[in-house]
Picture 1 (cartoon, rainbow, N blue to C red):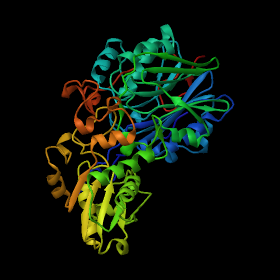
Picture 2 (cartoon, one colour):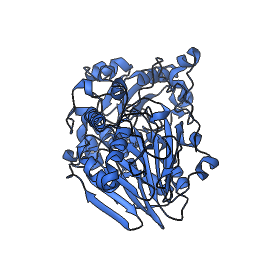
Picture 3 (cartoon, rainbow, N blue to C red):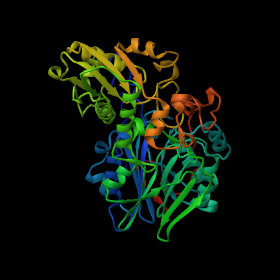
Picture 4 (cartoon, helix red, strand yellow):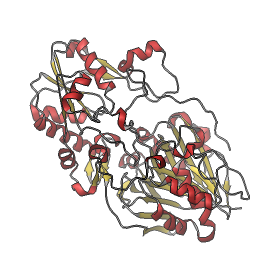
Amino acid sequence: MLGDHHEPSPASVTDPDGQPEAEPREECGVFGVWAPGEDVAKLAYYGLYALQHRGQEAAGISAGDGRHVVVFKDLGLVSQVFDEKSLSSLQGHVAVGHCRYSTTGGSSWENAQPTFRTTGAGSGIALGHNGNLVNTHELHERARELGVVSKNGATTDSDLICGLLAATAADQGIEAAAAALLPSLRGAFCLTFSDESTLYAARDPQGFRPLVLGRLERGWVAASETAALDIVGASFVREVEPGELIAIDADGIRSTRFANPEPKGCIFEYVYLARPDTTISGRSVHATRVDIGRRLADEYPADADLVIPVPESGTPAAIGYAQASGIPYGQGLVKNSYVGRTFIQPSQTIRQLGIRLKLNPLRDVIRGKRLVVVDDSIVRGNTQRALVRMLRESGAVEVHVRIASPPVRWPCFYGIDFASRAELVANGADLDGIRRAIGADSLGYASVDSLVAAAEQPRNRVCAACFDGEYPVALPDEALIGKHMLENLGGASQELPVAGAGYGAEDAVGRP
């Protein structure tokens, strides 16, 4: 069964300078469900809906019914990819869902997930991956040695994981193959994968990205965020532990430890990536963001008339800033909720409107005011520069910018697609240099210490590499890392010919 296969040239909304928007983007969201008697495809659909913020390039769902695995995927938002007809074709008791933003491999249909492989025994494996590996080149070489060479055109580290898993599963079974393969993966990976009958979930030893386990009345759910459990009515059980592999089937739930945990959870999840209604390591993301705003008001006070957020990401921190400073909180900017990822290139006229595609000022609120404008982060600075200019044109007397995170000075290699280091406005610039670059009257960033304190996590259990350049997992040479590394090598892995259906979005593949 084939999903529509179209390959438009993807383009994100551009920033005010006509460049691709430089907001930090997560690689993806993953969702897995094992629930006999339930409509698992629709549960996965709604789970992905809750995780849409984590990836807006492509979406896919696989379903296993005990005999076959069927995958349906395409470019676009979850609501664009699936309809009643496509969901009704995904029958079974186990499902894996994925929404993607690319950090390894380009934005093509072939790189949409779940990625699919067939083992030598004829079993199908569908896999979704959140995160980014740093030893992809090494895995590519291993895949070549095994003769696992690409015919499907996929160029992702995720496809490599699935290919290597399939290559060794025929001899020892998927669970044992995963336990053997996972210790060799370096970097960030939260995985949900399945064959025809069993759901698996795994998290890297550092636990860079969140992954949680939930209980349904008649089954289990694994998902990137607790908000995805809420939407399908699953109760939170616990986090999948760093270095843990979970298997769920008719025999129950099994847990094995494939590596010793070395927790280094991504601090940027609290700043921007996760939904505010999610809980990470026992701490509410919304409460963390409000607390960051309070601490920011203490670190960088301002003499002003009104605190306004850059919606929606700056809203909780702006509330906290107003609470701590005593300056009234107000709404000065209105967000167009329907501007997101698009495949339509804006015309030159529209491009010149820049930030007004997403935000429009409330002039009556802004006029004559000294403003504190709170946002979550600054990456390239183009958006903030246009925003400050727009607020002044709308009558603001002063614009004091406050950022609820430290300066982003280093790229992330564990699953966030920041701009390159040369494009980061904070690279090589001091605070006043950045202030002048964006045109603000004053500028203040939250410190790393404040961020960690607000998250209520021990400093040695978080990764703040994008702020301090201290990477918990060693990086390879620059030539052996990067978004298009596998494409430059001529493709990722390619599965050996097997009996049964070939790769597709779409194939019913499984045991005879």
